[in-house]
Image 1 (spheres, rainbow, N blue to C red):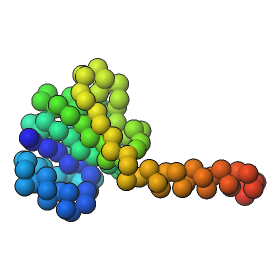
Image 2: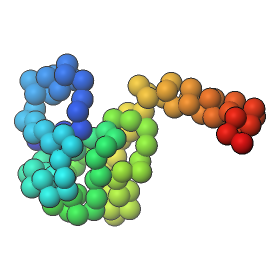
Image 3: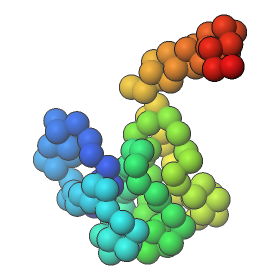
Image 4: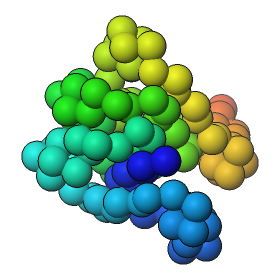
Length: 116
């Protein structure tokens, strides 16, 4: 498969992908560069720190799968994903504990009125 990795991943994960697939990296790339590099890709992998707009995805007619390594979806145009019927998977597991810890911390801060 032809994969675009738009955010830094663990080096071992990236090496494993490269052993089995055609991988292009565009870590922290601006929208114009993403549009240029995604053109012939079938899979998009990204994390936080990159905006995946409808224009970026429209530049890739062969896009068959989108993987979000993390839990948030605020940095991708989900309407475009749904309109095109592209499977969208989130791999939220590694960040789930940190998200839960932050939520619990915020609840304690609110209950103790720390930010009054």
